[in-house]
Amino acid sequence: MARYKEFEVNEVLDKAVQLFWMQGYEKTSMQELVDFMGIHRRSIYDTFGDKHALFMNALKRYEAIQSNEMRLLVEKQEPVKELIRQFFEYSLEKEGEPQGCFIVNSGVELGVLDPEVSSFVEDSYSKMEKSLYNLILFGQQTGEIKARLDPEALSHYFMNVWLGLRTMVKTATNQEKLSGIINTALSILD
Image 1 (cartoon, one colour):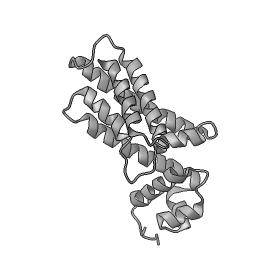
Image 2 (tube, one colour):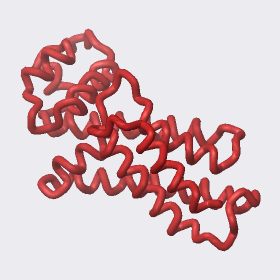
Image 3 (tube, helix red, strand yellow):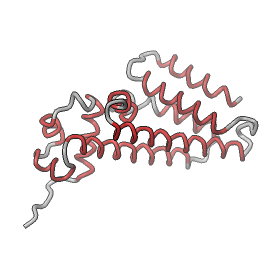
Image 4 (cartoon, helix red, strand yellow):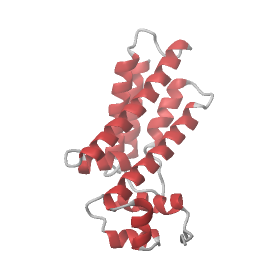
């Protein structure tokens, strides 16, 4: 007879996201995952697989949440330049969460060591660039962004700014500096 799961998968997966995000993959032990997630080791293996499979599931869960938040941002009825500003500022205002971005952190930690993580991170970055590209293109169609600007080059540029902010926020304490970076990046649209 099959046993009933005594936990909600996404709730415990969110806990795995938090622990991996705080400590990274290499510094997180299975025992720490068991303790932090509040489920038995056997349940982790039965539900997610080994530590690496759990990590990949955590990355996918985080990306899905981030994608949904980006979708909600884009659906706002606000000027495109303001939406891009909010996209950048969102990177800085994650109170109660670990610093930086779980996907960016994972790419830095494991990108050259783990082909599966590298491929996932690259794909995730491509999706984000595509969202930025579509937002910029929409801004050009509505006349908010100059048509002479290359939307693909802008999406690459803004992605680079976003990655920089997601990395800098881990150590930067000067919020004015980070805001200045955002203002300078957006000035390209003026």
